[in-house]
Image: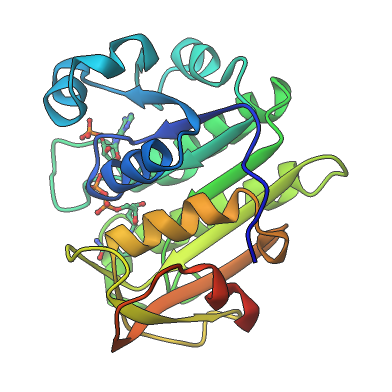
Length: 232
Ligand SMILES: NC(=O)c1ccc[n+]([C@@H]2O[C@H](COP(=O)([O-])OP(=O)(O)OC[C@H]3O[C@@H](n4cnc5c(N)ncnc54)[C@H](OP(=O)(O)O)[C@@H]3O)[C@@H](O)[C@H]2O)c1
């Protein structure tokens, strides 16, 4: 099924991250209007070329004023931000994955952004998971998710929370995917496919106000990832 294109500007938070870069490419391929919230304009221009210069909002998810500027006049947000858990100098998961996401979602809601899509993670509901020894990263992500669900459940607004498995760096559309709910599955998936699913979630009605897990299954070229939404 061909969905109607998303109307309005989409903010990509974490656009210079490894999943974020694929999200930007996917939006460009679809000729959608986008804006990039990045910490480094130099990194963004290196990655996407000087043509993105007018689309950049420079700032940190830690700063209220910068987050406010980033979301204003947008209709959608896709966040692929995540803390660098193994870097002791980097801000902790509580600052980025919980407080940062809450700051972004609260500002977006206040500015009337209609659709909010988050790249979270499998296993966020499992406090005993070994990854949680890094600053409780999974629990922090769950608390961020909870705020998004609460803020975006009101009529007229919509959220989609994606919980991918372990992230890989292969090209898009090379695998069948499994979508599931309830945090029951384990596995891996390419960042490129997560990005594609994030962009499709802006408009696919099956993704409306839904949290779901996604992993890859068999090697098999795909022409679109839209049919996998029928599993939901
Ligand atoms: N690694 C895995 O196997 C795995 C599995 C499941 C889910 N996830 C989650 O999936 C998401 C995407 O992962 P990824 O590996 O593609 O991400 P990544 O390459 O590690 O990129 C993280 C992004 O977050 C941004 N960021 C970090 N702190 C920030 C701050 N204070 N203000 C603004 N931006 C900030 C980074 O900005 P800069 O570009 O400026 O550094 C970067 O764009 C993350 O939420 C991650 O936790 C990861």
